[in-house]
Image (cartoon, rainbow, N blue to C red; front, side, top):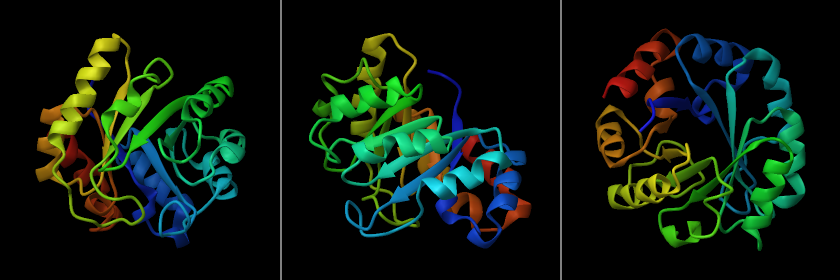
Length: 218
C-alpha cells in the first residue's frame, strides 16, 4: 500500500480567510486539499461552487481533490475541471450513468473518483474499476462536518481487496469522523488517504502541522 496522505477538508476552515487558510494548511503538510461541494439537494447542506474553487487555485500548488455531492452532476463536471480540480469524485447515486460520468472526467484530463455512502454496496464498483483513480468510502452520511465515525472497516477492507485485484495505483480514501483514534482503524483496513476537517482545524492555525502529523503517524 502506498504512503498515507492527508487531505484536510476546507469545509472546516475559516472561510473569511480562505487564501490564508490554504497557505497555512499547505505549509502544515497537507498532501491533498479536499473540497466538499454540496448542493442542498443531494445532501442537506450548501457549500460553494466552481467560482470559489477557481479563486482558491492560485493560492496553493497542492492537489485539489474535489468531492461533488451534487445531483445532477454531469452538467457541472467541466466547470470544476476548468476551475482547477485535479481529482473529481462523484457519488454512485448522483446520476443515471456513473460510468459515463467517470469517462467524461478522464476525457477532461482529470483523475476520477467514485464515492460510496455508508449504505452504498461495494458491488457498484464492479464495472468501473478501470475508470477510477480514487475510491472514497464515506464513514458518515454526507452533508455536514463534525459527525461521529461509523465503523465500516469491513467495507474499507473489501474496497482495498478490489483495488489490489486491479494491479493499479488507486487511492482508497476515507472521509468522516477521522481522528488519530479512528485513523488507526481505517489505515489497518486499507485506507491510504484520510480526509479530516474538525480534527485538523479545531485548535487553530498554530496546530495544523501537529494535527496533520498526528493523523499520518497514528
